[in-house]
Image 1 (cartoon, rainbow, N blue to C red):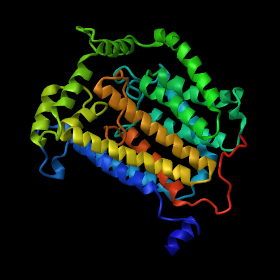
Image 2 (cartoon, one colour):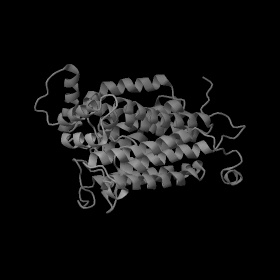
Image 3 (cartoon, one colour):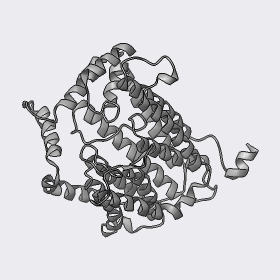
Image 4 (cartoon, rainbow, N blue to C red):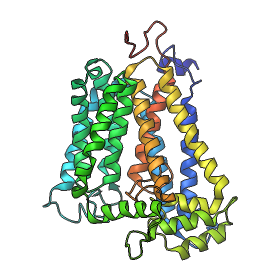
Length: 395
């Protein structure tokens, strides 16, 4: 403890709710590795050498993410305020690079029609995942010392900051990731003291303008929205090319029933179902087939622990930057969970959102571990004893 406080400061403490986020992240990542293996091969591995290649990569990226999170947690997180804008600028340049048509296909190859990855040989970099964290850092740095966001016109600058990465990601086109930035910005504005009536007015105006975005959607994106509407109204959707994936996912959800299937039977059912993206966006269907409804509730409890750790850490600190970072990363994680589960159960259109910590994907996994590292960095450092609470206004 003497060495710990010498490095972190006399007010540092290991008693922090951030451990809830770290523990939940570790368990969820290991569950993801198991489900990826179930989705990838028919026979259960008898040793580590027989794990599926995707499972091995997931575990490797788990190690990379945990080391990166440790690197974030050790130094004072307030130092990142100076680097926030340059990091976001670099991410925006990478997003622009993805859209340049003359970039060779061996470096940027579309996947499922999306130009979202840079091929670096052994790894693929997805800049949009890193942009999430960069945006949170910049928004927190901007809002921590200002009050103009408490006026209607003062909402314009942070909206512009969010609109730039949102627009570039939408052009890839990656509608799912682009949709995440708006609720994160709203949550951070609300935590920073923005007036609820101003945010409500913006929501109403956005809802009225939403139909204008319909022509900008790709045909398959419009079809997926129509599929969900037909499900709710009970209309037939025979011949829809986008209907197979969510229907198959719901079949696997139901196969698990209450307690789930055995390992061997789950592997056989998943393999015979031919569910697209079962190791990625649809991995919750694989998990539910293996562990059933009770297992699904257990996973939701683990996510609740992660969110509780992040939000309690944000409530505990008096530093405005730290509080907004916790709110921002918690909102990103919550929205991804809600949208991904909504896709799998069929109440939301399939828009390509990964399940945090569980889905296969190196950039995604490292990104959420970096978010966990920031929560830990903020949680380890107690607020100064005589500091005033952040975002306290007279009204």
